[in-house]
Image (cartoon, rainbow over all chains, first blue to last red; front, side, top):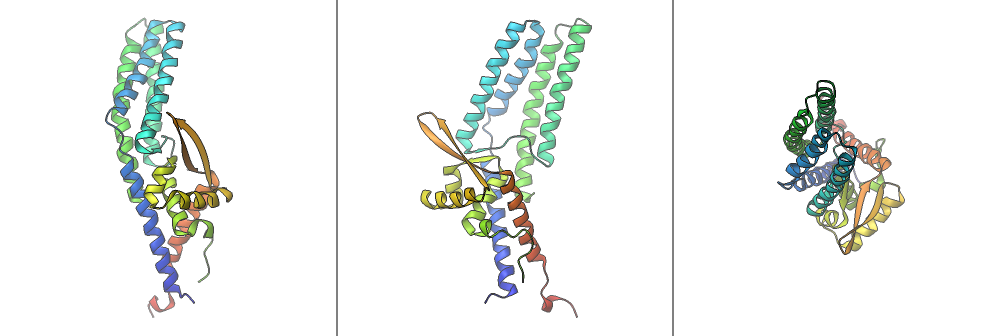
Length: 153
Length: 104
C-alpha cells in the first residue's frame, strides 16, 4: 500500500514532467527571423493602401494580405510544428491587445488626418508605424511567451 | 491521503500528462511534434490521444499540407480546465504536510 510520502513523490514527479514539457514548448517557439518583417509589410500595406481612396485597390490589397497572412501562418506551423495565437491570458496576451489597439488608433488618426485635414500621406505614415510596431511588439510577444512558459504560468 | 478535488485519473497517466502539458502551452501542435516531445511511438501516441479524445479533452484536426495530410492536436476547453485543475490538485498534494513534518 502506498503511503503519503509515495503519493507526494509521485505528484512531484508529475509536476516536473509538466514543467519539462512546457519548457520544451518554449524552446520550440522560436519564430523564424523573416516572420515578423513579412507580417509587418502585410499590415503596413493594408493600412497604407487606404491613402489611395480606391475601394477596388483596397479590396484587392486586403485579399492579397489575407492570403499572405494565411501563407505566413502555415509556414510558421510547418517549421515549428506548433501554433500559438496571440489570444491568451497573461502578459503575452496583453501585448497582442496593445498591438491590435495601436492598429485601430493608427487607422483612426490616419483617417482623421486624411479625410478631415486632407493630409494624403497620413495613411502611409500610419502603415509605416504599424509595421515597426508589428516587428517590435511581435518579438516582445515571443520573448514574453517563452518566459511565461518556462516560469510555469 | 484522499485525492484532492480536480485530480483526474484520465490525465494523470504519465504519457497523457505530458501530452496535455505540451498542448496546454500552445493552441495546437502537430502529431509528430507531440510524439517527439513525449518520446513515444506513433501507435502509443494514437492510443493515448484516443483516450483523451473519448474523455472530450483533445480535438483532432486533419490538415492537408502539400502532398501530405498532417494531424493537429489541441486541448478542448474542457480539456484545458481539467488539466489546470489536475495540476492544481498535484500542487495541493505536494503542499500537504504530513503529521510527522508538522512542528510539535
